[in-house]
Length: 234
Ligand SMILES: NC(=O)c1ccc[n+]([C@@H]2O[C@H](COP(=O)([O-])OP(=O)(O)OC[C@H]3O[C@@H](n4cnc5c(N)ncnc54)[C@H](OP(=O)(O)O)[C@@H]3O)[C@@H](O)[C@H]2O)c1
Image (tube, rainbow, N blue to C red; front, side, top):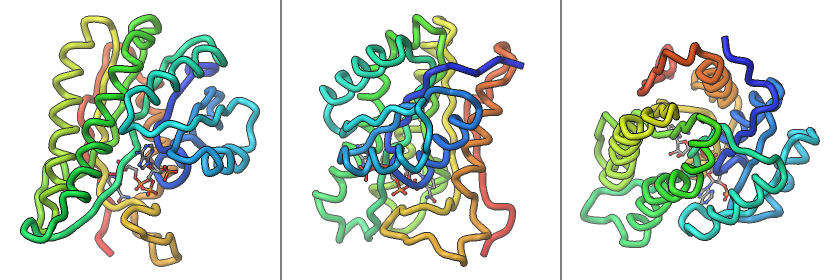
């Protein structure tokens, strides 16, 4: 089993939901964690909730490549290295394709798909140095299509294809790549407010535990694409 203590992880979109849950699990396992979001006040608030000195809060909008480059400069200046990247930032807007606005389409493609590439491009040289791990949070919507999902499906099918192709390129540098494809998770996704009826869903910490298990795995083993769903429907 790999020793993961004192590794440095960057989680995009760590202010709430899945990213925040993964951050909690990584902090509990002795990893130095960097979280980001579009608004620094929200990122600082999440950092305070995590309650650890080993957390760095960064403002970065993944739609902006320069933000991601600056984020990596801050991470290396603060922690000296970067071992783990979780490309998690994302959003969903749902409408029949004939009613979908350009604004919602662009928001999803720019954040969910181009953002994942920006994060990769900004971090990959650091990952080469540490023989690190890049994990994208795609979705079951990256393999199952559904009505009103044209934009979200397009972005998440894209993330799955992107991460699998990147995996084939980057294993030559001993960098692991995995895409995690969750079904329903308790979070603030699509303006949802987490409540007591969310108990049947995957919880963000469950995905945090999954990330920890992946990081600890024998270096010779790579689960490259993971579908994960609630055991039962509602
Ligand atoms: N919830 C589900 O059922 C589910 C299932 C499968 C996959 N997913 C995927 O999981 C990921 C996380 O979503 P979630 O469910 O945790 O939703 P969430 O609770 O709404 O959290 C979304 C996170 O993404 C960040 N974010 C959004 N746009 C960003 C941008 N342009 N730059 C940087 N950060 C940005 C948000 O930060 P700020 O708002 O602070 O900027 C927030 O931290 C998404 O990729 C989503 O597609 C969710």
